[in-house]
Length: 476
Image 1 (cartoon, rainbow, N blue to C red):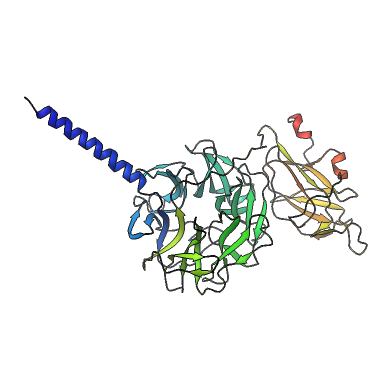
Image 2: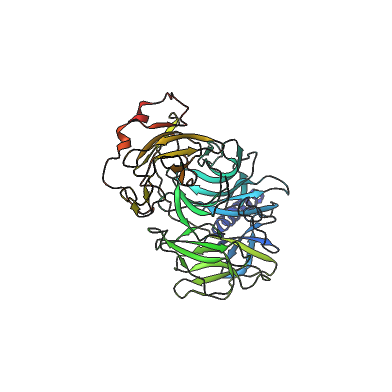
């Protein structure tokens, strides 16, 4: 009997079983592991305007770490000159990240299959792209350096399909927007800082994934900066690293409530000497943090107990590298997929203000000692878009060309400025937005009355535009 074909067949079967077993083990190997981003050298000269040395990190690399076996550290991005700030898909099978393939390359967005560690470039654009995050519905959001007459030079947010198609810009203001995360309610939370006409303090801005309903979520004290992406805990907290820009060594873990972000700030590490750079909530209720005790040390991985506000011993430490980002591999709950009101066939959006004289918690309309606003001026990046009288009740109603940045300042009857311009706004096509007043507390709801302004057609902004042909729905 010729046994040679049988032996060959057995070898093939054994080889196939080995491949299947090896592939399965490899795909499971990253489950329950930490995905950490590391970089060498001292962390200094962080530029929160351009992102240099903060988001565009030279010689960074992404690694997988078993916290029970820290010696098993595995580099995932050794084929790249620099790679950082990954995000894991909801099924735990893929990882988005930003990278330079070679030194001097533009930063672009890549996706890795965690089962075999194979990477593909998602998009290749003519400007730097950074900070990707998965969106429900097979899309992703990322930051792109944008240069045009509308925003001048700013880092704006874009979305696209996972194959790189269908790229859409969703923010349209001269702001630097970095470190975007996705809240469980489906909204985006991004670190946003105004660039024109002057630099303002950063804030956490929330918006829908189509760029509508963009508004301030949280703003720190003057002179503060946000170092890390904000993360959401299972207890309804938003946590992040906030630092004093006047000090190179000041990052603290800060917590705010999802329901009252403007009035619930807690510095959880104020009593700990040292500096924090990144934070991640875990199922145990504790946090994983990157921390260093002095500016001569490197950021290492620790566990932080938010109840006791205390640190554990270092989980992982390498004297040559800093840990600048922490992420957990594995499945997690998909955020809500929010419906979109954007209609690209419509050229404008609608903005209603109920009472421009409403400041803080109260209206000044019936206060005889305070000068009342009579007009608003709508400002563009280079010129005014027009002056509009407000109604007797302080209300105004505008139809604004979509996807252009504008600010509003309020004027008295002599055209003197009562309050300087607000932060930059924009309206997406077919978006409807409303506000209670001017610089009002964002927790207020409108008074139950019909503003006089809505009894008339909205004023078209810019005012020199007299005819806009679009869907009838726009005026409904």
